[in-house]
Length: 115
Image (cartoon, rainbow, N blue to C red; front, side, top):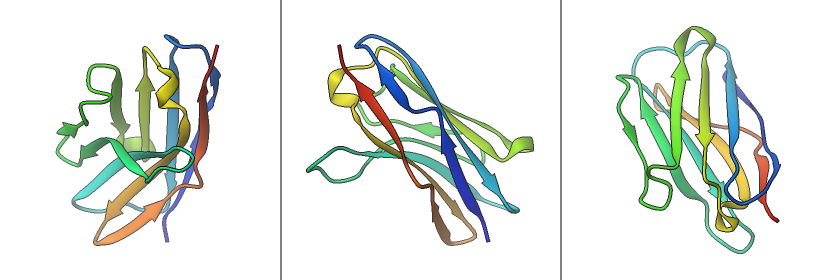
């Protein structure tokens, strides 16, 4: 059983930066995909970044050029570097892992962008 633990959320001013981390306990085999999602109050959960086992990445236009997803396979950890944060980036951010056909979610970490 894989468990995901996120860290790094907090309060930041517009234009600032934050780096989120998500560490997986347990073993990850074969093809997998990591993702970061976010959910703002009253809105649906949305994808903000994805990285595949081969290293390719995907971002929606809303964060492209500002957010960067990366992974450390030796540590079973994925990161989300968020720069030039905007008020509308405020949300709970969730880590997701797809591995061997199973979906795993972290508990979520709050990111608040406010002046």
